[in-house]
Length: 112
Image (cartoon, rainbow, N blue to C red; front, side, top):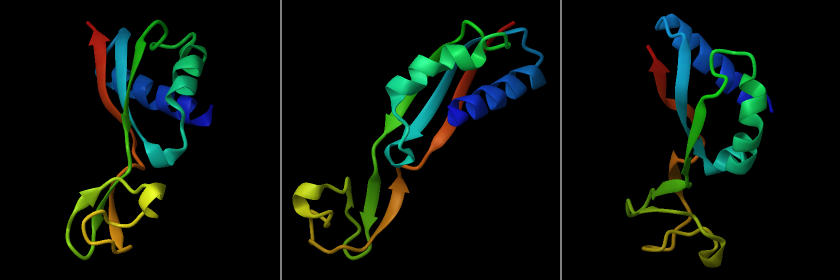
């Protein structure tokens, strides 16, 4: 619930800074590694924004899977336990995280 409250506060502050009276929708990106479950975000969002400038707004969630880049061959892939999280191209273990830890506000649509 704390993530939702932080999201609501950030979105409300942004909307107010742009002189908005009402927010129509908030689009967010949620990475797989955050551990946040989109269904829970959708369920608790209305409660978190109740009584705020965001009340009645729609929450749009873009779920981002983990994506890594192999340090050996440069292949981008989603680590998977079926191949023991190794690069599918060269089978090495070293990689750099490209996406999957995000929790970002992507867009806020305000009603003028």
